[in-house]
Image (tube, rainbow, N blue to C red):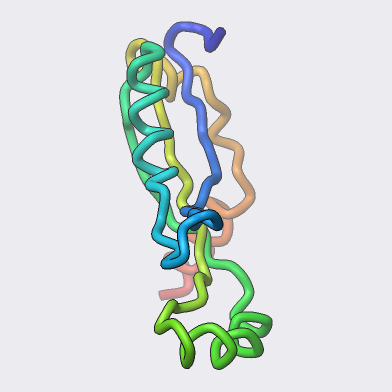
Length: 109
Protein backbone atom coordinates (compact mmCIF):
# COMPACT_ATOMS: atom_id res chain seq x y z
CA UNK A 1 0.00 0.00 0.00
CA UNK A 2 3.05 2.26 0.00
CA UNK A 3 2.94 4.81 -2.82
CA UNK A 4 5.55 4.60 -5.55
CA UNK A 5 8.66 6.71 -4.99
CA UNK A 6 8.16 6.74 -1.22
CA UNK A 7 10.05 5.81 1.93
CA UNK A 8 8.83 3.73 4.86
CA UNK A 9 10.59 3.58 8.23
CA UNK A 10 10.16 0.88 10.86
CA UNK A 11 11.42 1.14 14.44
CA UNK A 12 12.10 -2.35 15.75
CA UNK A 13 14.30 -4.30 18.10
CA UNK A 14 15.22 -7.90 18.60
CA UNK A 15 13.08 -10.03 20.90
CA UNK A 16 13.89 -13.22 22.74
CA UNK A 17 12.05 -16.54 22.53
CA UNK A 18 10.40 -16.82 25.93
CA UNK A 19 9.45 -20.46 25.28
CA UNK A 20 13.08 -21.50 24.91
CA UNK A 21 15.00 -21.97 28.15
CA UNK A 22 18.03 -20.15 26.72
CA UNK A 23 15.99 -17.21 25.38
CA UNK A 24 17.77 -16.83 22.05
CA UNK A 25 16.95 -13.97 19.72
CA UNK A 26 14.23 -14.60 17.13
CA UNK A 27 15.87 -12.47 14.39
CA UNK A 28 12.94 -10.07 14.21
CA UNK A 29 15.07 -7.42 12.50
CA UNK A 30 16.14 -9.84 9.76
CA UNK A 31 12.63 -11.21 9.33
CA UNK A 32 11.26 -7.67 9.01
CA UNK A 33 13.80 -6.85 6.30
CA UNK A 34 12.88 -10.05 4.44
CA UNK A 35 9.14 -9.40 4.71
CA UNK A 36 9.35 -5.82 3.46
CA UNK A 37 11.68 -6.64 0.56
CA UNK A 38 9.41 -9.52 -0.46
CA UNK A 39 6.51 -7.04 -0.35
CA UNK A 40 8.19 -4.92 -3.03
CA UNK A 41 10.43 -2.43 -1.25
CA UNK A 42 14.21 -2.15 -1.16
CA UNK A 43 16.17 -2.05 2.10
CA UNK A 44 17.58 1.46 1.82
CA UNK A 45 19.06 2.62 5.13
CA UNK A 46 19.53 1.76 8.78
CA UNK A 47 19.86 3.97 11.85
CA UNK A 48 20.28 3.26 15.52
CA UNK A 49 17.91 4.89 17.99
CA UNK A 50 19.62 5.10 21.38
CA UNK A 51 17.26 4.65 24.32
CA UNK A 52 17.59 5.52 28.00
CA UNK A 53 20.75 4.35 29.75
CA UNK A 54 19.42 5.10 33.24
CA UNK A 55 16.92 2.26 33.49
CA UNK A 56 19.35 -0.10 31.70
CA UNK A 57 21.92 0.47 34.42
CA UNK A 58 19.36 -0.53 37.03
CA UNK A 59 18.49 -3.76 35.18
CA UNK A 60 21.98 -4.74 34.05
CA UNK A 61 23.18 -6.65 37.11
CA UNK A 62 19.96 -8.67 37.38
CA UNK A 63 20.33 -9.89 33.77
CA UNK A 64 24.05 -10.00 33.20
CA UNK A 65 25.14 -11.99 36.23
CA UNK A 66 22.92 -15.09 35.89
CA UNK A 67 22.70 -15.31 32.09
CA UNK A 68 25.38 -13.03 30.60
CA UNK A 69 22.65 -11.34 28.55
CA UNK A 70 23.31 -7.65 28.09
CA UNK A 71 20.63 -5.00 28.47
CA UNK A 72 19.72 -3.38 25.17
CA UNK A 73 19.96 0.38 24.96
CA UNK A 74 19.01 0.82 21.32
CA UNK A 75 16.42 0.06 18.67
CA UNK A 76 16.91 -0.36 14.94
CA UNK A 77 15.34 2.12 12.53
CA UNK A 78 15.02 0.37 9.17
CA UNK A 79 14.27 2.49 6.10
CA UNK A 80 12.81 1.06 2.91
CA UNK A 81 12.05 2.65 -0.44
CA UNK A 82 9.50 1.72 -3.06
CA UNK A 83 10.43 3.03 -6.48
CA UNK A 84 13.05 5.67 -7.16
CA UNK A 85 14.87 6.91 -4.04
CA UNK A 86 15.81 10.25 -5.62
CA UNK A 87 12.20 10.94 -6.53
CA UNK A 88 11.11 9.89 -3.03
CA UNK A 89 13.64 12.25 -1.48
CA UNK A 90 12.55 15.10 -3.77
CA UNK A 91 8.97 14.72 -2.51
CA UNK A 92 10.07 15.29 1.08
CA UNK A 93 10.40 18.65 2.79
CA UNK A 94 13.90 19.91 3.50
CA UNK A 95 12.57 22.28 6.15
CA UNK A 96 13.84 20.36 9.15
CA UNK A 97 14.75 22.24 12.33
CA UNK A 98 17.93 20.29 13.02
CA UNK A 99 19.41 21.35 9.67
CA UNK A 100 19.21 24.93 10.96
CA UNK A 101 21.24 24.00 14.06
CA UNK A 102 23.93 22.33 11.96
CA UNK A 103 24.18 25.33 9.64
CA UNK A 104 24.47 27.72 12.61
CA UNK A 105 27.27 25.58 14.12
CA UNK A 106 29.13 25.66 10.80
CA UNK A 107 28.75 29.46 10.62
CA UNK A 108 30.23 29.83 14.12
CA UNK A 109 33.28 27.70 13.32
